[in-house]
Image: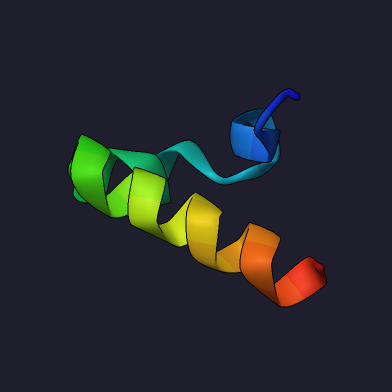
Length: 33
């Protein structure tokens, strides 16, 4: 499964740490399901 990281603005990714990105993606996936 490919995470939609490419759809997010790079500015947001630059301000987040890797852990925060993982938490955000997992939260979004839980919200969709």
